[in-house]
Length: 68
Image: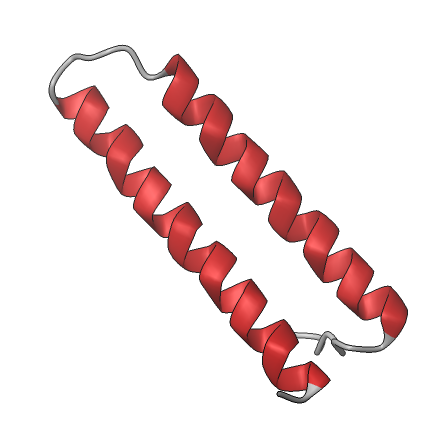
């Protein structure tokens, strides 16, 4: 497995986990259930994604494109 593909896969995997967690938080809100732990987990996943992207960019495994 080459580096760019592995980096894309890792980022894609984190994004999927984040989307799943966002949906979970929304379901908790709809049902009136406590959301603090789920929101904390969502923030943790978002921070880890940022750290992963930063690390992959620093090593050259990921080149971020500018949008706009």
